[in-house]
Image (cartoon, rainbow, N blue to C red; front, side, top):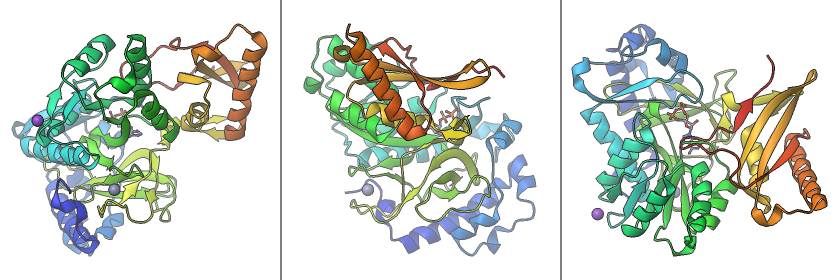
Length: 428
Ligand code: ADP
Ligand code: K
Ligand code: ZN
């Protein structure tokens, strides 16, 4: 029923395994120049339980940048066989290094994730994310092979070729970025195929924030089951937390990571079930352990047990990155609030773009929204009505009335990688 026996370990055993691994991680981390200094006063043997992790200092993205490239490594460069880099969504990228053992551990975790949402060795997986430095390429690829799936390394882009590969090889599992999935569904229809007739069953979607509404839209448009996949290169890449078939939050693999959720301003743990910043510690990485990493991602622990019987706690879908927050007229707004509202409206198509502009002396929020063809009509009054309706729905959610611009479907440029949701054109 599970890929790994660790998945339904009882909590007491899981927590003592965490403590044991945390101690050895600290011991090992002290071999890295950065942690040698950072952990100087800390004796791992003083930790009484995994909860004592709060006594350790945080590691930030800036710490990783300041140690670039080799300051986080615990051993000689000769012991490493691969590197990846973060996508650099929020600034200078950081590099992550893996020994062969680290790659094996990662592939096992990844295979475990895919198994949890129903992938089996009889499946054929097409990896539609970019390869190269981005962990969604090789990370997913080796996990898929580890599970025994026939793996099609299609890479990003070229929708025609993607469709041909899917049909020729009877692809049953897609790994695809959610913003691209919405676009791709449309392209499949335009190429003259019915998405209901495609061989796929399962989509692994992740790498960027997306709402439940966007997931449902992908599922409906593609006639597929879509599972949320969370990871970040600093913690290997994908394979950190994943949805099981119940689609009610992502299990964090607690034998491999310690997850905490903190109030980003005080650094203290939030109450169980409250939203905050996810902080992650590696427990099974030898080459580049990272302790209490501030992910900047906002989520919460979902209280209670999952029906699947896995004992590893679940996190809710990422509400956004702390860095994504926009402040306009004194109001805090997250792009996902806007997406949630748009994707719930039947008239709205696949894509949208948020623009922050300066008009006169004030800042304005502008939202460009692609409208489905059947609603993009000649009738001015109908269009204005739709525009008003969208603005009103958005205002209910974000408490500001944005300027809404209706666009024809496919008119907002779509890149191959993570979607850019916000463009800041404000005068500084
Ligand atoms: P970058 O931070 O430069 O984008 P990565 O490529 O390592 O670097 O991406 C990791 C980040 O991507 C995460 O910290 C998170 O913000 C986002 N992410 C990954 N998976 C998901 C997901 N399933 N839902 C929401 N956001 C995600
Ligand atoms: K196979
Ligand atoms: Zn579950």
